[in-house]
Image 1: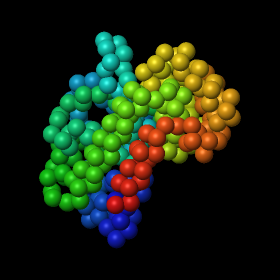
Image 2: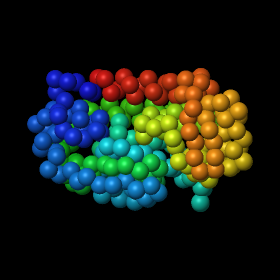
Image 3: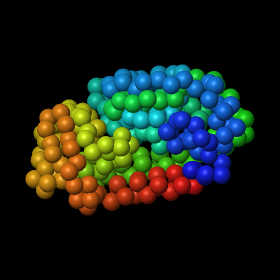
Length: 239
């Protein structure tokens, strides 16, 4: 995707937009709006109409599926490598997940009608988005395997690494309640898993913050799901 012969010299750090040919990005740029991603803000509510598509330059958007009347479970995360609003590209106008900002940053936002018009122009954007769609399918599928078969501390290690990759920081502000919702377990289980990783000197853990101390050690502690998802994303980014 980062083909230097076709990529543009725009200021965006979103990899999907940065990988577009210069003329295509220039045409799209006039319809893009730079917006802030504030921690905790809701991008889409469950079953809400998708009015805008977001291409993060920085920060993290968590995709939460309903797991009951008041419970949610994270099924995917999106950072500067991707976009939020993928169902619109696939012909679905409503979001079947709740999209929440879990790491503040900025994004390039485009109205749904303008986005669909650009997708119909026959340029590089649909090809890039098809490849990103496959990357998200791999992430979601592998996460489902992870929830079913792997220990909570392995899942926690995977999630911390994936989050760190996207926000490009080893310091992750988050609460036990937030991690509980992301991993689909009770806060007590999150606390025990974090303490296990802390005792192994892989992270420093408090009620509202996690600092990755030994990244290589944390990668070794994570399940194979992290490397599967990471390798797919790396392959996608260099195509």
